[in-house]
Image (cartoon, rainbow, N blue to C red; front, side, top):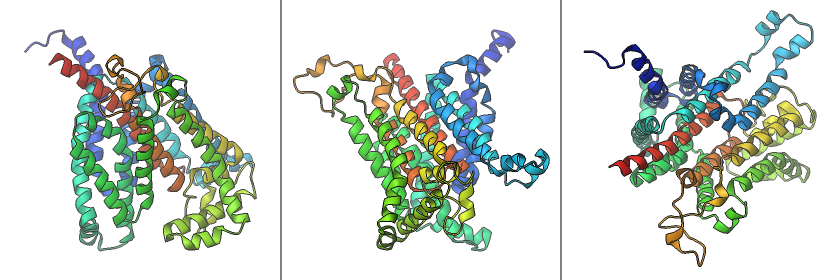
Length: 453
């Protein structure tokens, strides 16, 4: 058999489908294995996928880099500041040879820096995929995640029966607390993918799948006592409703929900340490911790300890990953990104973090957002506005409530749980953006396909 066009045609087809192939392989591998440990599986799988897609960071391609440049630059700035505040650089500054300093350092900075390159490569690769290619990837992600959700729901109903059975059979029943931790972290993955993937599922009218995802997240949250996940999902729903029914008059005047959330994010990051400090100075922190459920009471104690130590070095902080020095009062991290930024990187770190989140929300808004009026069967419109003359919304505009809800979920998760430097959490944010970008492209492709049919 002779292939028309020969070797050049084959190379062209490989280039056209290379990104799609890597994404297919990445998601197939991830969804098939992530059940066994989200924190241990997500970073290496995403790192390998990003390595295969590093070419998409090529500045000559321009558009993806320019679109994400503010967030890329600020996230890189945070990591660069963290590197210069690491024990490795500190030992070099004290005169220790580079080799000895590297050997003696904890080297916590390595994983986040490597993951920065590969995670952004995957985001830019998703941005560069053609619409048809994205549609095929999203179909794989949808069915794979639905299958994973069914397994998770069975675990939730049986109070992690499958996980406990595996723990007894293969690990001798050791460390049963890790069964709960692994289930909670996996639920975090499902939570972060819920809103961007729901845009595609709702468009395809797979409402049962959306309901299955939501029920599983909520039920698992109850089973493993991770009420932060429940709170994040509910908060995402509130943001979704606000963005979906945002008054058209406000939009035309330039008051966009993305811009309002950008301001609220900065306010939260800068004000949260002050709120904890006020509670401490008023003597209310300890009584409040006693009145709240155990997990939230523990958070109040951790946050109070973090603020106390931050006040000792308020301008430059204690250094990268210094939260670990204050164990057991602070177990590994502060369970709040703004407090960890202030404690470890001082005021500069806190300002960089606020700038990063400002850009994340501000640049979610599609271009020309203020010139588009809504049009949907179940949406409110301005009184006196004839529905039939309203233009059909571009896909990017239709996706706005879903993407804003997803971003709000991720922001709140970082504000209530985990720590800034957890590689798997960093990857989870990138994973959410990858799915969001491809979901928008997939809906575009499906609309075109329906027109052709």
